[in-house]
Amino acid sequence: MSDDKNQPQATVIKKYANRRLYNTATSTYVTLDDLSLMVKNGQDFLVYDAKTGEDITRSVLTQIIFEEENKGTQNLLPINFLRKLIRFYGDQMQGFVPGYLDFSLENLTKEQDKIRKQMVDGMGLGQMSMPGNLAGMEEHAKRNMAMFNDAMKMFNPFAAMMPGAMAEPTPPPAQPVSSQAASKDDLQALKDQLAAMQQKVDNIGR
Image (cartoon, rainbow, N blue to C red; front, side, top):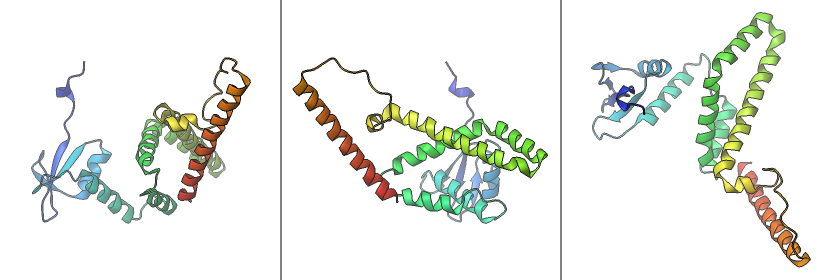
């Protein structure tokens, strides 16, 4: 049984009305660049409004990303990605996006050493190897999507019921002809309903 006392505690950062950030662990004022460096070094922190006590960590992290993107050195968020991400706000699929993005980045984090080695080896061999690196990244993204879909099937009954989503079930015991016909009609009606629902989702996405 793990001891929670051995787990590192997140540093508390307080944000004051003058927008200054105060690190309670070091008793010093810090900047967004300082917090960005803490994230890169694996140091967890929580940011609270000094007056209300509200947890504003999400907005501060978002602000850090905004500042990093505005530096213009090497953007991580392509314009097409940002457009697609904005389209998901208010969409029926919005609830699945955070889980998928977190899942994908977690897998990328786990495999980053291997990916770095592949990229370094490719650069050492010259430009001819770059398509291979891109193909490897594409294959990694496809694996992420497949793994995420498998995970979703475990708790999403509609995904499991979609045609082709799972292996064909074992045929049921023989039934009277009239009963078999009724079952087929019910199954077809269910498939038609699911197909119609999928079409609506696709139309909304477009």
